[in-house]
Image (cartoon, rainbow over all chains, first blue to last red; front, side):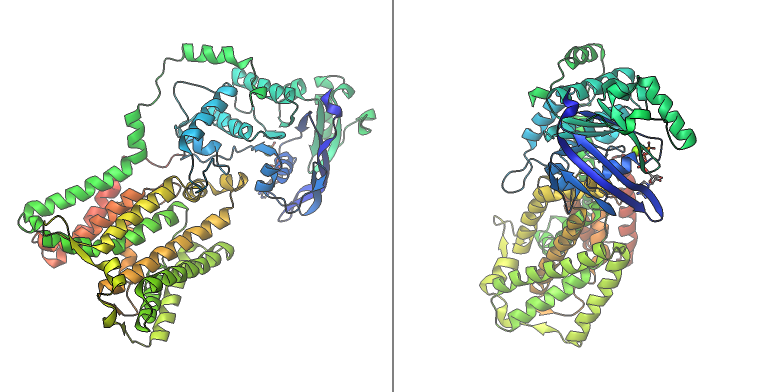
Length: 264
Length: 351
Ligand SMILES: Nc1ncnc2c1ncn2[C@@H]1O[C@H](COP(=O)(O)OP(=O)(O)OP(=O)(O)O)[C@@H](O)[C@H]1O
Ligand SMILES: [Mg+2]
């Protein structure tokens, strides 16, 4: 349904090198408004690098990033957040010695005209965000230190932070890794709620069944290159997608047939 | 944002809290977690004072002793509280003693040339900020370890000052007792107790409060803490890590300039090129006795204040309490080591 929306992000021929490692060798990925895009690929394929480039953390060596029709240069983490792109990074990007509130408002403190943080307002907002994603417990509150939280709870902090800014695009880099079944369900419901509100999600995951369940479209990269992409309807089910990814891993290419020509 | 509320999560949330019998950490526990290090620093100060006072109650009831104490403590307070920002951001500044000396020189040069004391003071602040900016830019954009860079810069600036001064001192006796002098280092008696409170002690209290607000509540201080805790996270969340790092050196430069200008006035408007040199180890010791850990990310302004009081009290107090002079270093070391152990109880680094 929403997958046919206009492009909200276009990444064109992105090349990113780390020393003599070419993590991305000319990847072009389009994200459309209102869709859930599943970004797939083996370990080390370059998914996180692509997402970090999109988030402004990595400066691409070549290529351009067009957000909402405008080419963006310079592209920094602040610029990305200002443009309405919030990212839950694979490493969660938290400050473990600080409280949940401080982490949620990291880089976007609620301040008055003097630059002083509005403590109570931030705590109230943090409470609201945590309830919104069903992230509540008796053992912690917004003042609790993040370093004392469990892995799943830390994930909750990172997701709550991505929600705060009313972003148009929410990028989730392996949000369900290390999560229990119930917590994974929560993340799925969160993604569905975000899509229902007309916003866009980029979802990275290694469990193809999970990604299959929630994504509208899939984009697969392999060793820094785009392998194939397609609408959900173009695949014959999750097992077909898994089959293609196996082929890709073993032979370096997949027998994608009609998929190479995206329908839209 | 209620449009994003996943209604389906509500029941499971209710369930979770119905089953979860665990308790949130008590308010007291959290208070100690937050403030334990400042509290330890305060207890250390009280213990050191107590041990000295018991040894020589007469001296330790004498307001003159405290007058002298309040006179000498502010210089360390100005420096140590600013160093909290530097250490918490994950950097180290060993160049501040040279900035103290250089700023004092600039200040005295202006006063000697007839400029008003208050005006000269503010120009000196600007000068300190400028040197701090230079140091920060070299450390951050030169990508040099701040320990090595500031160590080198300390010698460099000190050497430059020495070359310019050619061993001369600067004096301006005519500026003593002017309005500005009274404003910065004048003395007044506290409620006829005989305790002479110097103005620079009042200023150092105000400065400490200012630093506390800046550190704990201002966006700059919060970001200093986040950068020191995990600079990658801070960068990924859009914080300009380099600007924050340069900022702490500017702040340290301002504090050094204040100290420089105050020190020369404490000496009745006399400047010599090495003023400030003695504060390197004192201020760092005060910082760590004050409970700011070495690893960055967290720190305490009030702890640093108590730490500054403690390290100032030890040398004068030890002699006053009847310890022979050569005990001072020993006691100094003992207090540092014991407080470091006490601070361990406030928790190791959280990751
Ligand atoms: N900062 C860096 N410095 C050097 N090499 C890097 C850096 N970041 C990523 N790489 C390299 O780039 C390649 C792609 O890494 P990336 O993290 O994007 O993979 P990924 O697809 O996210 O893998 P995973 O599924 O394991 O998270 C890897 O070979 C990695 O070693
Ligand atoms: Mg990754």
